[in-house]
Image 1: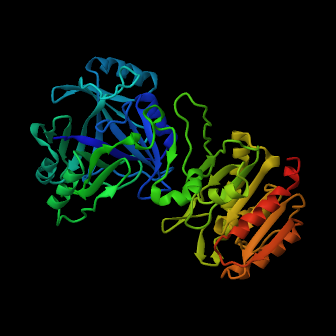
Image 2: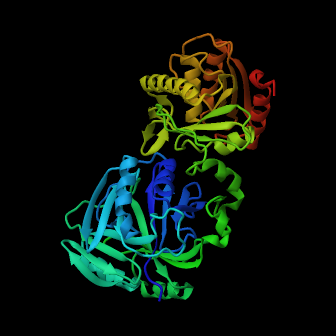
Amino acid sequence: MITGIHHVTGITANVQANIDFYAGFLGLRLVKRTGGYEDAEQLHLFYGDAAGSPGSLVSFLVWESAGRGRVGHGQVAEIGFAVPTASIGDWITRAMDTRLQIEGPKHEFGETVLRLKDPDNLTIKLVGADRPAVAALPDPIAPTKLHSVAILSEEPDKTVRFLTRFGYRDGPAEGVIRRLVSDRDVVDVRDAAGFVPSIPGAGILDHVAFRAPDADALRRMLLDLKGIEGITNVHDRKYFLSLYVREPTGTLIEYATDAPGVTVDEPLRDLGRTLFVPEQDADRAHDLKVMLPQFALPGEERFPMRDLPFIHRFHRPDDPDGSTIILLHGTGGNESDLMPLARRINPRATLLGVRGRSTEEGTNRWFRRFDAVTYDQEDIQAEADAFVAFIDGAVSGYGLDVDRLSFLGYSNGANLLGAVLQLHPGEVRQAMLLRSVQALEEPPVGDATKTRVLMLNGADDPFGKMAPALEQALRNSDVSLDSRILSAGHELTDEDITLGQSWLAHAPSFASD
């Protein structure tokens, strides 16, 4: 009977750093990149041996620039990789060469162990254990397969009893750690009574998946777990069938089949090269491929990110025309929300999405407000100043062509952009304001004769009554303004795209194209 760990899934806040560590430093192969099955706007990466074999896989959900989680009981706290026993010295040297802090070597359960932290501060354990890989990697000291996971439990006896149903049996114990063994790997259950509970976030392992021999075994497990709170139905994850359940102290467990495997949609030689989206999101595939973060594999050309005042993300098309559109989302959005819209307006533009720094009950905004139509004027001024600093830093840091630079803001993002136009005339030379209103109570009058603005508002927009004040203020500053009222509410429509395309195509700085 097949037993053991199928894969382990964690959460990362930096996709490029994650790639550099797991595919670069550790030498694993990226075997799959896909939109998440629970949320297709969330990139999901799988690493493993040369064939992406179950038992070698570690995956990451990408929550770019997310807040950190908290290590605590009710979670997987550590991943262990088996590496050749004779390679421990080589790993110490490699870690020192890359300035990674290491802990060890130590001897645990009769094995030599090194510990280090990945870029999200997740604990990685390298264990000297000669366990041949199913499909060996080119790097001779690369991990061969998963060796173990460690689970923090408030009630380890309950956790141990629960895990035995997945093919594990009692093994040795050391201190507060009870080891469970299968025919292929181990699970260490650590007594964490009195410790704090875990909180999801970056740097946290979301779950461990154990191997199911086939779909029949999965169905038998579903019946065996019947009545346990939180048990899910069987899900088709394309690369495996699985179900989820929480063990008695809260750790999320998945039970997953080996088949059909990661080669179901890519040949072995091309694993990890294509970005896939779940079948249920196929109609959004083009949009998702713009929204999901880009990255470079080891050895590929990369674009270093600069430390600027706002969280931001680029989408670079395959055939860029040299222009850039900077995007400011609406309330509750993020830096990728407007990328599909902007891609339709100009498919060849480089897109730079920016995330607002203000939050309201957990939702992203660009400045504080006291109610739906009363805004914090000091905060608007401060965030407008900071955004101008961001523009200057982006132009110099990324080499953006100021003559090919446009801005697109929606709702709250458009409101901040409108404020920037008034408070810093001339800093923004081309802007599309979608569903914008006047956010300033005392708008200044400046000289913005070299600025073009397209202002699109909806006839049925409940906030539309505040738009004329912004329109008049922009005209008072001699902005070249094209203002339209569309048959729409606050939502965006295809007409926004059509008018945006036409307006951008006739921009003087784009006329040479």
